[in-house]
Length: 173
Image 1 (spheres, rainbow, N blue to C red):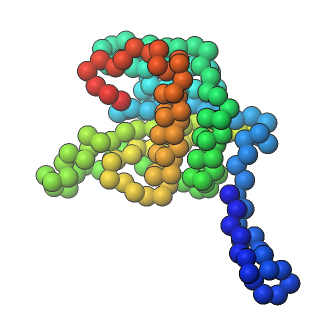
Image 2: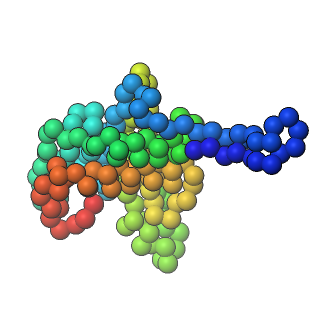
């Protein structure tokens, strides 16, 4: 992504103001593991390219695991782009829980809570994030990483391995 000013006066009539690179092909390694659900920190819902595994908590007391999971390069490229745009290397202040609703009108918002745990391996580095998306939280840190998590889930849902998992019994995660 590149932002350029054109028609400038002076030495150059064109100036690059901002350049953001997110070419996955230039990275030596890019893998991730996302856990998500009502209690992501101990959830059995996982999308992992680190372990090549998908797992789904079926709510009925069982978990289905699919080994050999892979995401196509183009999908990993979109996920990597989302991570860069979310400034994954920047300092993040993330909340691992949602505050209780202050009044009855917002009491239903706690049902929208979704928790995430994301581990990212890029080249020789590693970053880990844990946060709760409280439904009405619009902070940049939470919103950016939730966008990344949703992109990972969306891309995983397009794979045959994900579509072959049995459906969740009684609830949608």
